Image (cartoon, rainbow, N blue to C red; front, top):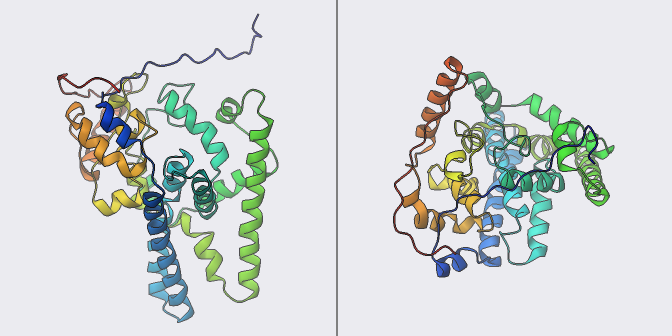
Length: 343
């Protein structure tokens, strides 16, 4: 007998996955410490260089270059969330220790909560765009020019929300329906891990603030603690192209996820999450192998556009949905072809 307020159990979704030849399937799933270090250290190196250049410019009185440097650092720093995301999947490094180490490092720099994220994101993959089992992304989503402009230069509301959310986690307060769903059941250890990490982040960023100001280096906490809330324009365009303007309540990732093909530099900063259909189809494939996976299954995908083309498509869908709230975008898929045996 169920209680009156009991939530019905989620139903497993039989997802379509484009078949991949078995040998290639094995190759694509191989993890490499070398490739993991190449991705992680290269990304971190860019962030450190831009942060150091901003520090140097401020200490030498170059105000314009300080502002530009901080903006550039923030543009890169917004992608800490994608670094944490990929590392949280446990696929970037072959060695578990390095996955965990870089997960915590990028999470600290980006004010991110990997333990809570894992609980949320596992459900997002399992029930992609099937509410109420996936509330991480819900459609229809509407963005305006104002939304983009808020992310463009500096985003105080996001900073305020992130600090407040971290403070709530540190006190053991998990507010909202999605938290209730993700943390439902007997999961005391998960809750303790989230609380402990939130306290570590607050203490760490507070220490950076106090020590830096005491030494006269106020620019350091501005860069380290405030940088991820500056220059979010590129991250906004990339991340919000993943599912916006797609279909929900379907069992085909090609209909609820979007793959885009931006410039290779953007793909690198984005940790190859532009291959979003591929990532959802085969979430255990490391980010550095997603391009090969795309090449293997692109014949079964609808046409893939760059960021500009994707946002034109999103704009058209949002325009139609304002006029017709029940409008569902039609997404044409290639006719089935003879494919190798499923892996």
